[in-house]
Image (tube, rainbow, N blue to C red; front, top):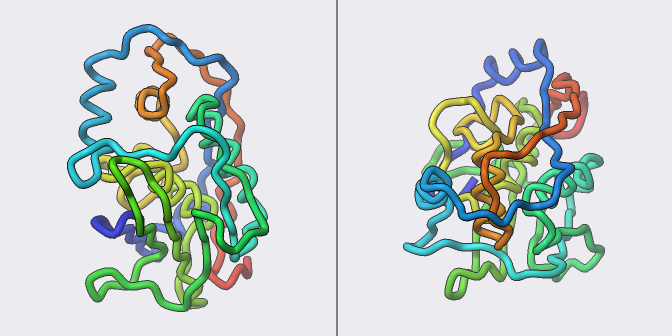
Length: 219
């Protein structure tokens, strides 16, 4: 999450997600360049403003150094890259000096409260991200849905600042579902220059939500 928001996953609630299945949206369609709707603009203003302006990464390839070596990271990137629509492409890199750095830390705290993960924009210039770190809590006594956490945190990486209300999508405060709704995709594509409306069709890919793992990586 951003340093202005906290992602708190209650252990009991996290374990409860093992009983359900998770549907992640993939997007197999070209971006629609029709005028953006007022609803999408309101959504962008509510969730993509950081320090008083819309923030995003430059067009082109953005490298990520994943020190945690999360096995499903390519899947996480595929989902958000498809949501963006092609103007910006995030990719894994072996360069530790990449602008996005993901690493483990035993104990991650925000305002004295332990959280599952934290995303911090260390350098944002005139609305352009330059340097972001994602800290994953490796405390073995903390349990959470690993896929959901990475998917949620990377939503913050691409520019999603404020959490959504409720638990109906991946950017909710607790990240108990990994659904990326239509309006979220429309907002992301607007921010990244691929304007779209609501006339899109989604195809889904089901993912088992059984990957509730200890932060150490042990099932």
